[in-house]
Amino acid sequence: MYSTNECAKMLAEQGQNVLACTKDLKRIAKNKGKERSSLYERYCANQHSFNVYTYIDATIENLTEVQAFKRKMTLFGAVFAGTRTDYEAEIDVRQVEIMYEELVTAYGEMMDKLGFSDKTLVK
View 1: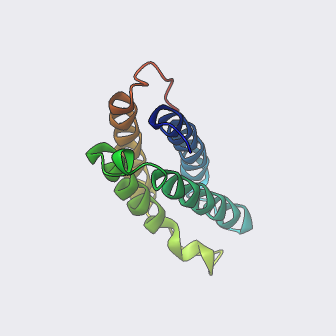
View 2 (view 1 turned 90 degrees about the vertical axis):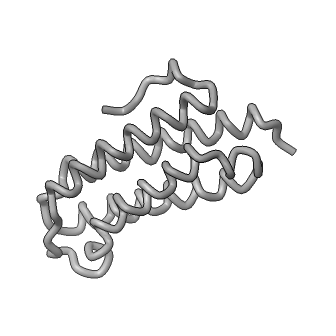
């Protein structure tokens, strides 16, 4: 069994992984092809892992800031959903930029709540 502190640390680290994927996707959002689709799949895998980690501790799972970050992940991923089956799908690059900033903000708020306010954010 993990302590709440250990769960919070795992969640913070997995959140960093999500943001790293998000940053990569933002960088190549306007590109078409398999690389973008592969990055989106990696993003989905990291999102899934983050979600699984939230289930370890109900106290953490139910934090407003954790739920807000999960919603922002879903919204960011939805912009890329078409790339899973269509390598040439058009992506709204402006929407990607907006959702990226919102996700980074939500991550910062979650980190503050989890007690990791000194954690370096991916920008």
